Length: 458
Image (tube, rainbow, N blue to C red; front, side, top):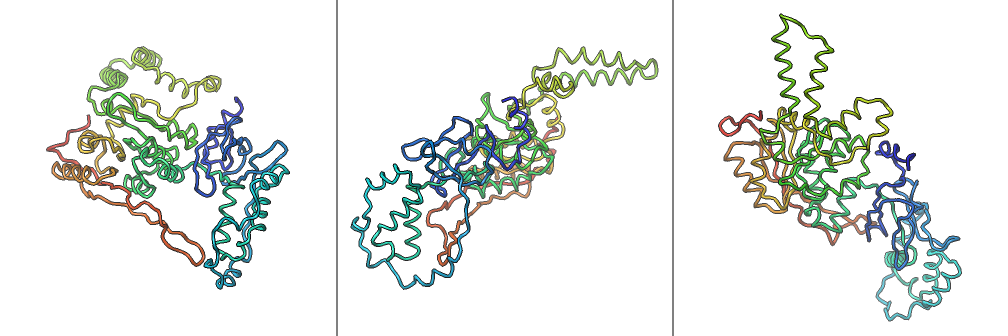
């Protein structure tokens, strides 16, 4: 494990899976979506049998696997996808056939269940079982090409299920959660999440203030777009941080993990939360300026004074960070790797209090949006963008009216994202029959300075 640990921080954009990484397993073209962490003992259940995921370690993302019979029984084996040849020219020849003369009375298939079990005991693969089912079907040749493909696909899902290894990125994670557990992410659809990042002006070297009550999906999406530059401050109201379990699925390296921090809203907005080091440094600067004409202190004595003032006020987190940054290589090996969601240091909070955040993004369906924005918006720098998502329109309309009345923002608008998914197949392109018709609402705008209602951040 000691050899694999340094690799984790450098495989952020790697195209090959590694032991300990998270993957999204797409079973039978979206019929089942499973998040898994690859290790020697991880398994996946197909039917009534568990299959080891060990063959998936070391394969490129996007690899396709299927259940196959090996020396040790049924295992997952990698398959190569080949492009079909000559399919376009054969379809017009089947236009004269239809399914009107086919009667579904369960007598067309002559192959019984015992025969299929016998083929499995003999070591027949799933493809051979499917070919045997097609050969023993009395109505397969009478069906149209579309019906034949549908029959083949149905049998393939049962006897030869396929597994696609997908990279867990913002798009795939959001689609998987929206399909399986939409309530866990506040019914945040992919197009609404993309619009949030765009209206929130998420760019490199930005300091983004995030209120994430959708399981960490918003925090991970912002950190992925920043790419290791800038900071993501996940703030929370109260004493308990909001859960961020989805962030672990992004396979972020150490460089991005240390850019994801969390802090209580009261710590950021409170005027009493000041740095003791800042106060001591200001006193030393004043002392140096007053004594410049009398006696200039030596560099050695000044460094000793700073060290004595800082050590009693330094927290445990600050001491670990300072040691990791200023020590030699033997000390760096002893330090623990950064973890996503560490508490923000006092230096960071003081910097954000002085300069303000670059933008604000909120996805908190359970909060009172209007009261939360009253405390969050003053933390932004002037001319900073903000974007707020909610499943319903009325909370955003109330918040927009408050911001207009108090003259705290301009350029505000409420957007309703809309997405239509199409099925694109030969001679049958149309919108999908089952798709989401509602994607929530987003309030966006720009913070401005209003001397009558806004006070300086200091």
